[in-house]
Image (cartoon, rainbow, N blue to C red; front, side, top):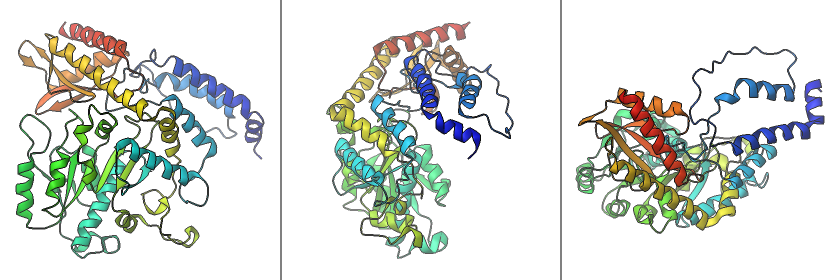
Length: 469
């Protein structure tokens, strides 16, 4: 055995104790650690060491060279994108995932697949999904959308009498995909699935909103004259957390021939709260659903779930036939249902967190984050400099900056955000909403409290005064 390996194995307790201490230090100081990297930190690539450094020296080199560039993206004032954190229980589960190093593929090779099955069932209860939905974990919302649209593509092909998973796209006409305000990952998925970004047909939105106009959607479906299509409905748009009327779209399924995919990456968490679950009324009518765990479930990256009513179509797309994998049973292994053959046990952090905090714990997180979004919205509404661009429905605040009567251009917004983010105490990202450049504040972390909104507001005003000069 290599001497470094042998030494590390002998001293594994000491090495993991050092890692634990560094981890504790990070977690205890997470809200003091900048939310944006120090741009003066210059990285110079190292060279491969012939004999290796051993675990302890490698850990020390990492801490010296890279630790300063680690940001508090799991902290309470990281409002960019839609980023959750890791609850204590989720972190416990995630550490065990690496320790156990299970391949969550086959149902009879370990308890890993059983853990995933149970976690999916717990999540269906959390989100109020009917039993007829099956599900699996994937890496993120992009891959969940990939699985959902791959199933939808297979459904359309079957409607046309084409066995797509065997014969490919060569003999099928362009598949109609329609949406109003699709997330960028939907277009990426269309590219990956060979359907092409340019084949998205955009339906008009309700005036002043990002939600689909149901009348316009029905008029489009009438024009198809029964031709099958895929509708991508949004349960929480990225800019304003707007929701398509899933119930009305579900009613259209009684009259028209379409596959309904619901992209509810973080908006579906509205179902956890009696205050907000009306937003996702009708979600049970979907054929497939995307929900992201490393957003509002607050488990570590990477983790998301895809749900579907069509596991038989999913099997047609993703089955992986090989002698060494054995025969496909009536309840197929996960290797036959998702893109990856080898799979990390990413269900375990979710299992730990759901078990630890339950329905009430997640309701509290969701409702507290939404209340804090309203608090920030009130401050913006009362401000002379900032202006809301949209109603704040859940946890995302969309706003912009005015100098007098003139709104900032996108390049000015980016310059302003450089000042905000380089302060280090809070992090925001830019956007464009209905042609107006603006800023998004996505509040999705279990740690975030009212004091964090006060600090973030202080940072925004400090940056405004600096930019004005």
